[in-house]
Image (spheres, rainbow, N blue to C red):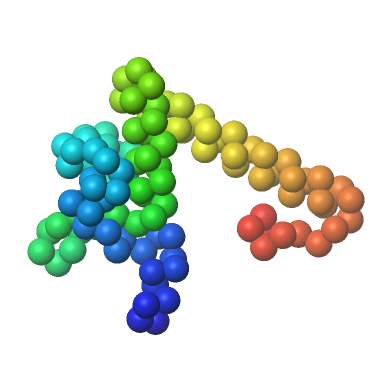
Length: 109
């Protein structure tokens, strides 16, 4: 495995301080996302938060919404609706493939 784990967007490789710096936020913002259950980082053996790329992307999207004037609860709801919409689009695409007689995609299996 080694360094190839860094290619996995779900691998928790980024410490909280680094994550806050990358996102240009205070660590308190990341802690608030964790407390709200919307971005729940892994914990190292020492109890330190570790974020994956996927979690950082979600936190960045939330930051954009909050910076745009949305409160955190509203931003979380928007993200949830965006996730639901993306899932619905994937299901529709898979059904269209099936109707067209194409083999099922690996994600839809």
